[in-house]
Length: 637
Image (cartoon, rainbow, N blue to C red; front, side):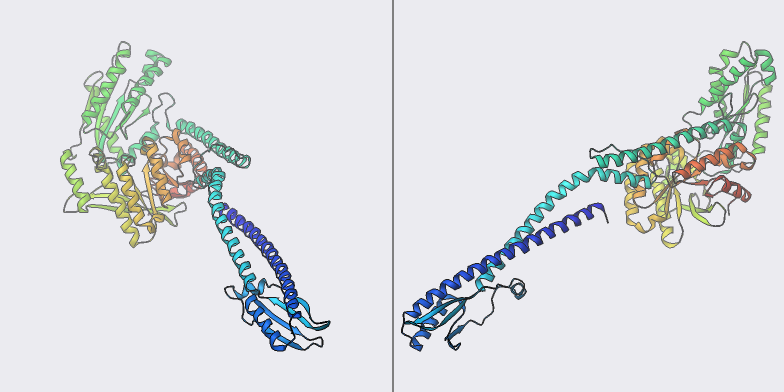
């Protein structure tokens, strides 16, 4: 029971006791007053009637007529004359019960008035004793009407007091409501601070809550900063700041095997002269400066291009993963132009033969060893062409590019015609024995033969054509249809471009409100880069979804760990760690330490941690020991 209800019950109880006491006192006082008045009336009437009878002759008929006349006109309960010997000479009695007054009230507030008595004289001798009692009907009626009036005034007063009290309680307890909202936010893993109210008791409570939130945020930020430093140390080249060899190759493997990235792209290799030669020619310090200049140019080439990543493969050799270019030649021209404009003018006098560059086209499911061999061959051909040259090798098996309008027609027809489907993959518990939920991954049927495209094949084009919102809405509808006919939980992905679409969010809210029974079993995931690119929109979306009972998570987590302090306010249910940290985890002690710390920080604020891209069932015990709560990937069955 809420505090407000308890306060109102206490107020109502106090008011009822106060009214009850007032009612009892008032009724008893009124009854005592009426009894006194009845007693005085009885005495006066008895004296007057006895005096009147004493002056009459004592003819029995005449005495009886006088008594009857007084009885009929005076509203008496009885009039009786008894002889000195106790014999009743005359008696008149009104036998009816009081009317218009409930019998329970008559019994509860019974009037006990003393009858009036007087002596009737016959000359100098006593004729008899006159006893009379007035009718109490009107006294009861007056007492009952007064009680009803008092009750009515109490009800009106209670209503007025309730109205005023409601307003005052809302004003007084408004700070308490803010504190309650903060407590509920903490229960939902959203750590927010509130302004301190003026009321001393509430101010003390709010200050304590804010101090706790501040300590949690400080702890989270400090641990996040430590883990970010560890991540940079483990997965970044110390000199250039680019991805280390292992980290880059993990990304390359994800591009070749995963279905969330585009199915084709380009790999660019950049090779400088042998590092020993550079050290002898320039000196170690200048050689390091050259490597940093090259690394900076390659890093800047990926700014604003989703999925593009540069790494230092070895000594003076660099690689750039370019999923966003239509051809290897276009990727080679872009990287070559940056190096010749930003790096070559500064170093050409001292190192005329500064670099050679190759670019090769890759496609999904291509063996990584084969791709690297082709890149090395292309690099050798570039070296044969002279100083600072490039060579591109296109994929002869690549399909011709589909025009944008054809994509628009295909995607629009797919949404309207039901050619979108969900493939389900299990997300298992840390020990691999039970299913946490299933992830519904979108597929597009492109022809009558049932050829299916992965999300990475068509979602980038859908983003360019502003068609991600209807596709995502269709995905949610497919998930709801499946949930209504099956058991278990389902997670679906929302595009980064969709979460900021107000029209989509409104339609999604209306759709979920129509199926409240499935919301508890529906999970939504947004890629990390989309979360931080549209952070405010994602925060609003997450809160709306959680209010309806859905769970919310971030997938491909870990690329922007330096910004993860923002996640403490979102109330996330789970995160799915990027596959680049999971590939080859058994042979990477540095990533093991980083992931152990990541799981510890996430668990401290109640977030479940899942591993993406697990390739081997044998990695599950190690992941569980690191703190992962579950895993998914090609090695999970």
